[in-house]
Amino acid sequence: MQKINLKVNGKSVSKEVPDHTLLSIFLRDHLNLTGTHIGCDTSQCGACVVHVDGKSIKSCSILVADINGSKVTTIEGLAKDGKLHPMQEAFKKKHGLQCGFCTPGMVMSAIDLLQTKKNPNDDEIREWLEGNICRCTGYQNIVEAVKEAASNM
Amino acid sequence: MKTFNYHAPKDVKEASKLASVNSAFLAGGMTSIPSIKLGLASYTDVIDIKHIRKLSGIKVAGKSLIIGSTTKHAEVASSKEVQKAIPSLAKLAGKIGDAQVRNRGTIGGSISNNDPSACYPSACMALNAIIHTNERKIKASDFFKGMFETALKKKEIIEAVEFQIPEKSDYQKHPNPASRYAIVGVYLAKYKDIVNVAVTGAKSCVYIDSDLSKKLSSNFSPSAIAGMKLDSSEMNSDIHASAEYRANLVLTYAKKAVEAC
Image 1 (cartoon, rainbow over the protein chains, first blue to last red):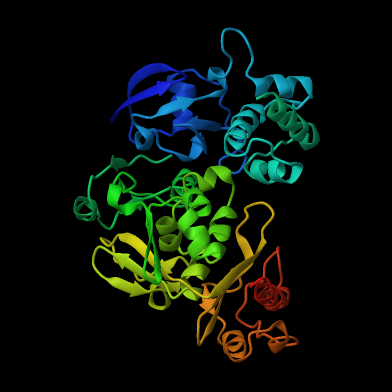
Image 2 (image 1 turned 120 degrees about the vertical axis):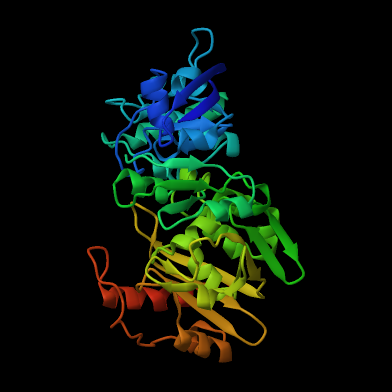
């Protein structure tokens, strides 16, 4: 067993979990933060993307023990005082989601892109979102949403 | 997912001591964790070397660029030192997998896995790399032994990879559109008297194409290799590309790499 101490969405959490616990499982099953989705078992879909110490990673491919002591932000941690994050707002405005399953990962990944590059062009957005798959194939509006957010962030 | 014991040693000595026939070293985990999840691999002990500080970092020393084994792809891609010393290496790192893989995956993890389609092994071969381990220094040409096989012993840990800075170099890749692994990748490095053309993705293990290297060493221009017929008999043939197509890609990308230099 591993004693895990993390700061998740600004709150300190402390749990004892089996050594092989993945971060995605820790968030969903141990903290009930089910906004982080698991869409595949091959690390390809990106629905589970969260931020660890500010950088986007696939939570399904990381042991929680490995990031012990880190700060984690999930989709649940974006809205502040009942107000959506500009990226969430942009996805809503530009219809950047259809079924919505991939959306948490898309949003978390896209925010990391804007941290790296303030005003990405279409190609740069598509290239960055390589690791996020939308099974509704709604990429056009996802790209539009990221551009919208870039102009508001 | 099968259970295992997780260890996070603080130094290489302790990490090496923990290793056994049923253990694995964990660096970025971008291959090993999915493999464990899918039941393709199982271990009693997973030894995380990521928290050993001295294994990460980038520095230029004389004619060498030295990259610590747990340095992440994103760090190599954005490093000013790498961009200046060997720009093609930064370019290679920036095109591995996706952004999240690049935020976790490491150079040492990539080369010790030696996936036949991985990008970094071709850079090691073309750039006359020396692999520094806790036990010895291994030349890249002696390091990559075969499909998913290297010269590493069970308790041996890669500490750094030392690349010889070339006059010019380039990396060209035909990526698998889903995984971004190389269907074929060609790394070309030009030194004063010699040109190395390393190929990944085409065969069961990375290799130096000696014919292409020889021709380009005597005449560094695309016309020197135009019309060459490469032997495809040992090349991979799968749903993505036939052996003949791969042979053609190797030549095409070798030419492109020369043009880009």
